[in-house]
Image 1: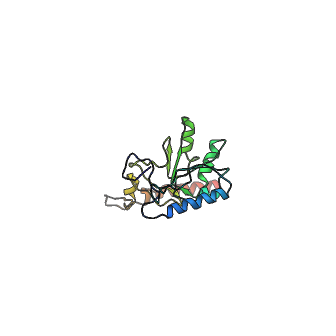
Image 2: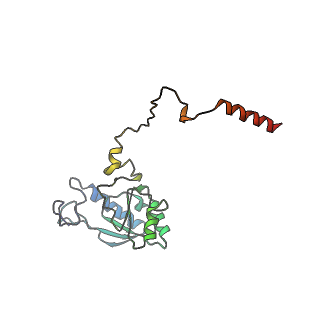
Image 3: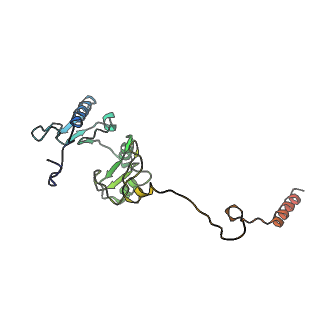
Length: 199
């Protein structure tokens, strides 16, 4: 844990110019306690490293509490138990934010389910890769409250393109829409056949 310019450091400060991020984290921890959850690790400030350094924190939740659905932007990991993959996906999709999501598994069927229409509803869905990783060649963006388009990859420049469909007629005749050709004679025959059938 150290300053952002040192590559050997795995965790940096919560903010560099303001301390409100630390205050938001401490307020979130108070809500966690009020909602009956268990603090397993961390939760302390580290003033010896600087005013914006905090310990990475692990919290065990009895269920999906309201605090889990808030964007705290702090190093807090919420642990929730589940019985089935469907239950875990439901917990993932129940929050109003939908930027990154991830599953860790060696089961190909479960991985495919997580990535399918019945799986994660997030803009980023990873398998065996953490939620903080984003591939630069892919579109980066979320859904729901974290929606608003994509950046990076081919999805980025498509936002600046004007979509237009074109049809060019090189002949000297004016065809009907959709290039449909209707024979007057066949229409009369069809109408006569219909009248004879009704009689």
